[in-house]
Length: 83
Image 1 (cartoon, rainbow, N blue to C red):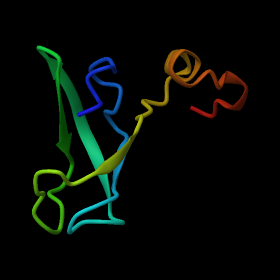
Image 2: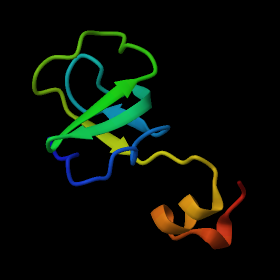
Image 3: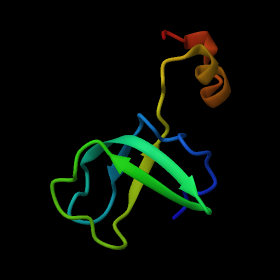
Image 4: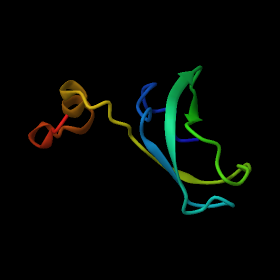
């Protein structure tokens, strides 16, 4: 929960850091972020080391596609753009 307020693709190429559960402390790359009928889905680049259980928490970080337009619109950080 909590990801449906973001546009599809917002977390693509980003990361999730597990905050609870068997994977706590591990970081996983996000391959794709989809949104359909207000349900967000994250496709991970690799399966977590341990199984994901209902209620496992994580922090998602937005992904970057290394384009100037994205840097401006998503992060408002053109001054530090390094493409």
